Length: 143
Length: 207
Image (cartoon, rainbow over all chains, first blue to last red; front, top):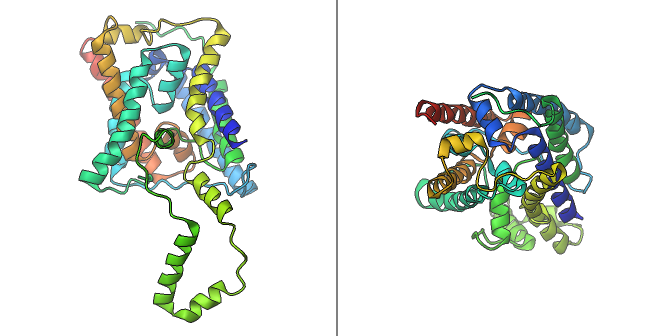
């Protein structure tokens, strides 16, 4: 049941990202260049409504429908917050994708996005190695 | 170049839909929405990533009791364990596995791919597989090794940077900002600003 829920959630989110334009390179590029404010609008509305929804959820119930507590993960500021985000921003600016939308692009038939997805996977594998060997930073993710 | 004609949902509907997922997902699963960490989970489950060995709940408890006895004495341990209910070790393992990203969480990423496929199939329109759009063609020219290498390098930056910062546009930008997390507010402002800066650098370079 848990597997079906996560698969279904991924499918729904993939459809939402595709139909809202968040997975579109051209739309993302036009947002970055301030030529079209469509995706800014999506971001502002989604963040605002999510804020209200999560606030209400926190007050309404402690346990998830599948069982277990609803965990509101804390994300403190840490040494990797700025540099990591900057590195991500470079990649995002170059290819117009994030970890999720790269997969949506691939599913939409942009086979060239396979290169992006492969890169994301490699980067995800590379960071823990670099962190353990050279940095030793506590980045608030389990590595 | 004029803006791309929009065949997307109106921004307010797209934003509402994202919010419904961002609130519905934790309501059902207990986990806030966040995609970047799922790559590590999926790679772990495909045995492509070395993860830390899991500690059995009973071993963990023994270590905790030993530390408690060392600090507070045997009486404190006796008081804590007196009348304790029998352990459900299998249930506790399952709960720990779920908390660490077990269960079905690894299927979220394939779900995203399927969602893109279904969305395109519904529209009955398939794009050029070698391109991401007209701005992509302007920036990288004809499809070739250069474009592939640039996308791969960008992907490495995305994967590396999101693991370093602990989140991406969904984890930081939606869930983290919506819950007022300081790390998310700083990271989101940073990656948005850098994304804008990089795009303008391409424009200045004539791409």
